[in-house]
Length: 309
Image (tube, rainbow, N blue to C red):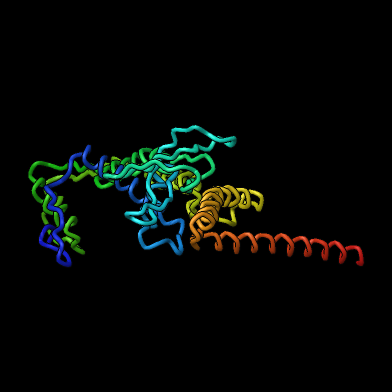
């Protein structure tokens, strides 16, 4: 039971049915959390010192757009959020870096620290998620409302004497009984059934949700299946769509790789980072390229055959 414990941990106790506003709020935070967890799983850090936390580093990059890597004599190698107050060098990079965290604040420079950027512009990725979350949550709640209207798709009119019999029959239907047996239903007059819902918009509504999910995952550089089926798309469309996703991911990977090079050079470490789905993109583009070459050869062979004939 909820609240009685699960693997030794107490679960939260929930009250009765939630209000519409509570359901709106739960849906909003559920969507934001779901997309955020996916975004935080895009990269894998390797050979970070034991005093570092790769999951916290990714969270810092996701919510702040950048992080600072440094060595502190008391805590060892570490990474925190950072303020960049200037002055700036020729390439608009802050020479002074103010590292800060819970009960920690220390000033570093470009000579003893490395700035890790989330992407070329240091835009926090959570802003993308924050932008699309209310749209996706609103669509999902609209589906909930529309689904409720489909649960009562007809209106029944009957004489007063047959009212209890009809209610009992509907109750048995709701309880999933296979058949309802009786001889009195309808004997006291005509029972008329009038449909209230003549069509369902669920297909279009779910298509809208999938479109928003495609947009947010593409903006985060996450390959997803919320697009049109591959066979419905011509080759330039398929390549163009995957190009945008790939370039977004590589923009973030390139900044992380650059930071690794600078960290290794400055501190003599062997830190590295990989994108968890880069090879998937590579294989897909190889298949697309192979298909184009094969198709071109087939056309040439058919043309040569026609000339010979």
